[in-house]
Length: 604
Image (cartoon, rainbow, N blue to C red; front, side, top):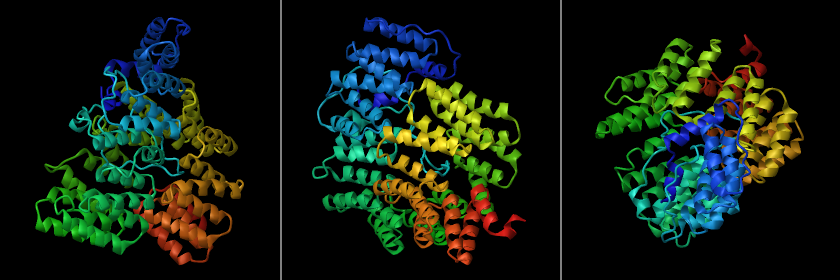
């Protein structure tokens, strides 16, 4: 069976059992020590039926060490589905040892290895998946890992965007995969791995398994795209140029070159390259210039370009959606509301438009309208975002029980989301003054999902927010010993230390090591600017923070950049930075607090 089906096919029964393992009351579990692997698998399945996912995963993993390929495969799938990574690692190692050329085994092994940040092991397994020939076990899989990846370890809150699409959890294997097309296989595997791990880790593993000399232009463009996601612009350019050398007409490679110029801040080169893409492929490149101008924050020019497209073609619906997003991006929420309302009441109505309208209402302080809008989407394609935001409003209204029920109800309908929703719920509690409850929730989750890095990380984040800084730093340091050289974790530790004035020299060392792996990551550039500011180097801090804000218009970065400008004597520029950022993010507590602290009049 193709490896993508191993990661995409989770039966409804298994899903219900997995959520029971996360929420059911504790029950007496059977002893997992049966010597007969077949008997142990029966015990494991009984544990699943009882809702004891942890015992099921551990019992299956033990059985796998004495069982055959079938037992090892099922053990791997159950442990990964239960997010029990130690058991999953033991089981997948056994499966791969029994079937070293099996693509299914290699794909699942690579998934677990990346979740544990074992890059060399993941790289070797990926090479097995990508090699030619028929290398599958042929046994149908019944479980998969929930589609997730660790949250950004940046010190900034991730923002859910309504225009982002989510990969289907139940999609069939594509014709290209079924035909064993190597480029399609690489694309499918990369997409699946990105659901489970950070882009820098996936890039490190996948790039080491691909021979760039023999790789096709499509494969090289995919690597370039992955490098951009991993915040390594120079590497992305190298891959894209290799692709263009082999195929000068490659649209994907040219598109990546445009984005690389944008990331480097070379506006003229980006615009020139975007126009070339449009000329080379007018259909696929229709919005290339408009998107480039928007990315460069030249919003009025982008709007004029979209108006030109509307006048010259039949892309009105696409233009309207982009104009609405452009207004929202620029902080013109009245215009965005008007445009999203038109979209929501037209034949082009979408869940995304409704979500944006609800969010705008929430920004305007109209919580009742926002809540009604979010409730309309609780069973939509954007259900998680809508329920999370509705729950936040309910928490503000002191309707805690209803808020948590809104999240719990979704898990009962989508049990594969239980693990993710636990983290969401913990942050929701912390956001509303219940950090201790959030920490306790994650500690309980760690009992069920032992040594899980995502839970360990988020627990450290909440410890810091609760004022337990030393505990947070210690937790991050322990996690780093298990995930040496993980750049996102290095940045998280370095930033936390810098923000609390703890061993600034050591903190900067962690941040610079992270930046070496992700040289264009705005969060890491923000961390570097902040630690330089803390060390009294305002000039260098301003340079780093300006670059970070150009890459990502994040309000926390704007707060840092403005403060560095203010302390360096450039108070007029600081005011300009803060004003522009507040126009985009009027509800940013950190940005407002920074302005109020440094400008006495702002407190009134």
